[in-house]
Length: 104
Image (cartoon, rainbow, N blue to C red; front, side, top):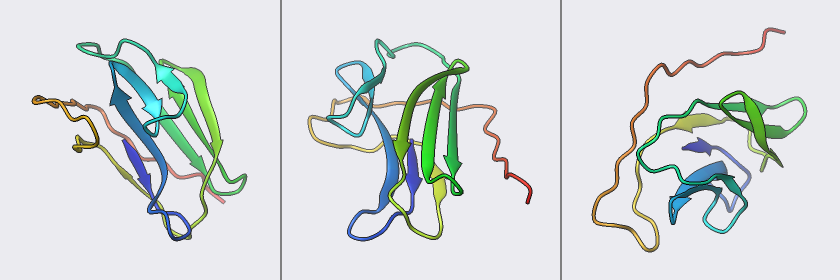
């Protein structure tokens, strides 16, 4: 899962990636959720422009809070992307995706 949008030279403010069966913040960042293969879990990502922070919740529990990387426009993207040490089979399933905006 990615939040696209940041100040150059980066393209993203957040990437959640699976390495070795664990969901991580980028490839070498902290583990957000261990042992994710063949499991459903609820993922909520809040990109708060006002505070500049991005919060990641797993099953309604705050697991990660990071400072965003700037940029004026952000977009959410879900899917599977080959990275370093890619396996022969990569799959992710998503359902019930909702995008909400805070009203001014």
